[in-house]
Amino acid sequence: MKHSFEHKHIVRSCAFSKETRLLLTGGMEKLLRIYDMNQPDAPPREVDKSPGSVRIVAWLHSDRTILSSCSDIGGVRLWDLRSGQIVRTLETKSSVTSAEVNRDGCYITTCDGTGVKFWDANQSSRNSLVVVT
Image (cartoon, rainbow, N blue to C red; front, side, top):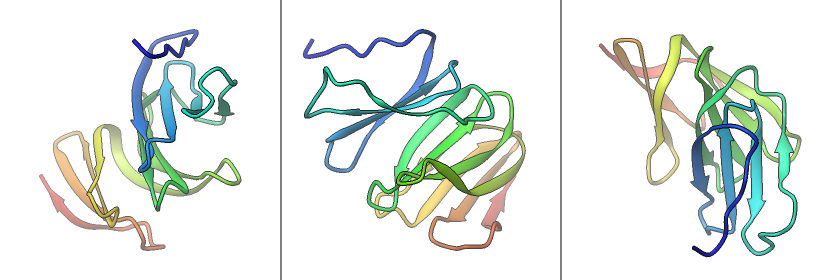
């Protein structure tokens, strides 16, 4: 083991940035933490405004945007890394159980309830492209 990042409660998801310099974590504490892998002993940057327990985290837009979903609240939130604020919410009927960003970062796939949705990651509207149920 190279290093361990301790949390106060259950961690549900983690994701490396594109260059693997940053590690993003989220879980039951309702916090998003960003660790600098070049300084693993430094305290993480914390984004503490998650509306619920974090289920899924991912990076978008060349690591300038964070995607997160909550275990107990529907929707997917896109956070601007510079401001630490939610800049877009992808609305869903129930909590998102899975989310993935495609390789080139143009599309987001989410699963909630009995549906799979494909979203344009670069579009300013809140509408999905295709819904498969």
